[in-house]
Amino acid sequence: MSRTIHTDDLVSLHRGEHGVITVRAGTELGIHRGLGIAHATDRALQMLMTRILARGRCAELLDPKLVEVDLFFRKVNWQGDLERETAGLSASARERLDAYVDGVNLVLSRSVPSSHLGSAGGRARSCSRRLPPRR
Image (cartoon, rainbow, N blue to C red; front, side, top):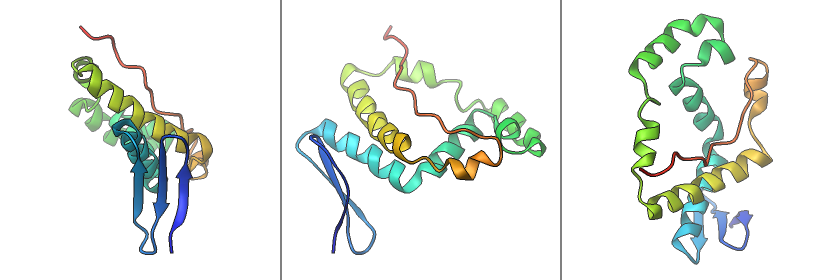
């Protein structure tokens, strides 16, 4: 038996009896939007925690004892090359990325696992679609 996760003009998602999400869309952009919806549906907390970790903000948002973790990830600079990487995307790749992010943000806007972060002073925010201008 299948359960509907999401349906709109671009994409529909269903969860099968074994828990696997199936994405159906009429366009490639619909598939990317659906993938974003699927990832955020099953992994929103993981995505938000990874963002906090990558930005070196664990001590600020979760627990002051995590300062050493933040220092490590700031040294590693996971986010440092993000602007350079996205600036080099082709128009087509940017369009696909935007569709994926729209799917993620759709789910985050409806139900963010903020109860997990709220007690630690964290606050979930949507992902940014703003990419630096192409050079």
